[in-house]
Image (cartoon, rainbow, N blue to C red):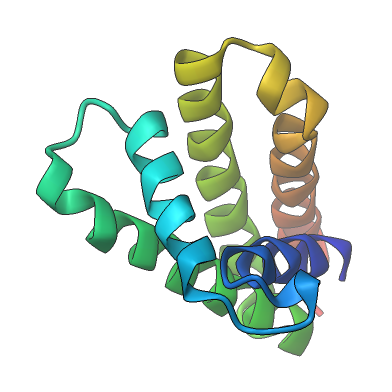
Amino acid sequence: MALAAAFLSAVAGRFGLWRGHLDWSAFGRFITRTSELNAFMPPFAMPFLAWGATITETTLAISLLAGFRLRWVALGSAALLAWFGTAMAFADGPKAPLDYSVFSASAAALLLFLQQRHNPS
Protein backbone atom coordinates (compact mmCIF):
# COMPACT_ATOMS: atom_id res chain seq x y z
CA MET A 1 0.00 0.00 0.00
CA ALA A 2 2.86 2.38 0.76
CA LEU A 3 4.35 1.91 -2.69
CA ALA A 4 0.98 2.54 -4.33
CA ALA A 5 0.50 5.65 -2.20
CA ALA A 6 3.91 6.96 -3.25
CA PHE A 7 3.08 6.47 -6.94
CA LEU A 8 -0.31 8.17 -6.56
CA SER A 9 1.23 11.02 -4.55
CA ALA A 10 3.76 11.68 -7.31
CA VAL A 11 1.02 11.65 -9.95
CA ALA A 12 -1.16 13.99 -7.87
CA GLY A 13 1.77 16.39 -7.54
CA ARG A 14 2.20 16.48 -11.31
CA PHE A 15 -1.28 17.89 -11.66
CA GLY A 16 -1.11 20.30 -8.72
CA LEU A 17 -3.66 18.28 -6.76
CA TRP A 18 -1.69 18.56 -3.52
CA ARG A 19 -2.46 22.29 -3.66
CA GLY A 20 -6.16 21.53 -3.73
CA HIS A 21 -6.98 22.08 -7.39
CA LEU A 22 -6.06 20.84 -10.84
CA ASP A 23 -3.17 22.85 -12.27
CA TRP A 24 -2.09 21.88 -15.78
CA SER A 25 0.98 24.11 -15.57
CA ALA A 26 2.31 21.71 -12.93
CA PHE A 27 2.32 18.97 -15.55
CA GLY A 28 4.20 21.31 -17.88
CA ARG A 29 6.86 21.62 -15.19
CA PHE A 30 6.93 17.82 -14.94
CA ILE A 31 7.61 17.60 -18.68
CA THR A 32 10.50 20.03 -18.19
CA ARG A 33 11.83 17.88 -15.33
CA THR A 34 11.43 14.78 -17.50
CA SER A 35 13.62 16.52 -20.11
CA GLU A 36 16.28 17.22 -17.50
CA LEU A 37 16.34 13.61 -16.32
CA ASN A 38 16.32 12.13 -19.82
CA ALA A 39 18.61 14.52 -21.68
CA PHE A 40 19.71 11.66 -23.97
CA MET A 41 16.20 11.52 -25.48
CA PRO A 42 15.08 13.86 -28.28
CA PRO A 43 13.01 16.83 -27.06
CA PHE A 44 9.93 15.86 -29.09
CA ALA A 45 9.69 12.63 -27.06
CA MET A 46 9.43 14.34 -23.67
CA PRO A 47 5.62 14.77 -23.51
CA PHE A 48 5.20 11.12 -24.50
CA LEU A 49 7.72 10.01 -21.90
CA ALA A 50 6.09 12.16 -19.20
CA TRP A 51 2.62 10.85 -20.01
CA GLY A 52 3.96 7.31 -20.26
CA ALA A 53 5.53 7.53 -16.80
CA THR A 54 2.32 9.02 -15.39
CA ILE A 55 0.09 6.35 -16.90
CA THR A 56 2.51 3.61 -15.83
CA GLU A 57 2.71 4.85 -12.25
CA THR A 58 -1.07 5.17 -12.01
CA THR A 59 -1.58 1.69 -13.45
CA LEU A 60 1.02 0.17 -11.13
CA ALA A 61 -0.53 1.90 -8.11
CA ILE A 62 -4.05 0.70 -8.89
CA SER A 63 -2.78 -2.81 -9.61
CA LEU A 64 -0.85 -2.89 -6.32
CA LEU A 65 -3.91 -1.76 -4.39
CA ALA A 66 -6.11 -4.31 -6.13
CA GLY A 67 -3.57 -7.10 -5.72
CA PHE A 68 -3.75 -7.73 -9.45
CA ARG A 69 -0.81 -9.87 -10.68
CA LEU A 70 1.04 -8.62 -7.64
CA ARG A 71 4.29 -10.41 -8.36
CA TRP A 72 4.71 -8.92 -11.82
CA VAL A 73 3.42 -5.51 -10.83
CA ALA A 74 6.00 -5.49 -8.03
CA LEU A 75 8.75 -6.33 -10.53
CA GLY A 76 7.55 -3.58 -12.87
CA SER A 77 7.51 -1.15 -9.96
CA ALA A 78 11.05 -2.12 -8.97
CA ALA A 79 12.27 -1.64 -12.54
CA LEU A 80 10.51 1.70 -12.99
CA LEU A 81 11.86 3.03 -9.70
CA ALA A 82 15.38 1.80 -10.49
CA TRP A 83 15.15 3.62 -13.83
CA PHE A 84 13.94 6.82 -12.14
CA GLY A 85 16.69 6.61 -9.52
CA THR A 86 19.38 6.00 -12.11
CA ALA A 87 18.16 8.89 -14.26
CA MET A 88 18.11 11.14 -11.20
CA ALA A 89 21.64 10.06 -10.23
CA PHE A 90 23.02 10.77 -13.70
CA ALA A 91 21.24 14.12 -14.01
CA ASP A 92 21.57 15.43 -10.45
CA GLY A 93 24.14 13.26 -8.72
CA PRO A 94 23.51 10.49 -6.21
CA LYS A 95 22.07 12.71 -3.46
CA ALA A 96 18.64 13.25 -5.07
CA PRO A 97 17.56 9.61 -5.46
CA LEU A 98 18.96 8.83 -2.02
CA ASP A 99 17.14 11.78 -0.41
CA TYR A 100 13.87 10.71 -2.03
CA SER A 101 14.45 7.02 -1.16
CA VAL A 102 13.94 5.98 -4.77
CA PHE A 103 16.38 3.09 -4.56
CA SER A 104 14.90 2.01 -1.22
CA ALA A 105 11.43 1.92 -2.75
CA SER A 106 12.80 -0.03 -5.72
CA ALA A 107 14.38 -2.55 -3.33
CA ALA A 108 11.11 -2.84 -1.39
CA ALA A 109 9.24 -3.58 -4.62
CA LEU A 110 11.86 -6.16 -5.54
CA LEU A 111 11.44 -7.80 -2.12
CA LEU A 112 7.68 -7.94 -2.71
CA PHE A 113 8.34 -9.60 -6.06
CA LEU A 114 10.63 -12.18 -4.44
CA GLN A 115 8.22 -12.80 -1.56
CA GLN A 116 5.38 -13.45 -4.00
CA ARG A 117 7.48 -16.14 -5.68
CA HIS A 118 7.42 -18.11 -2.44
CA ASN A 119 3.89 -17.17 -1.41
CA PRO A 120 1.73 -16.40 -4.47
CA SER A 121 -1.49 -16.09 -2.47
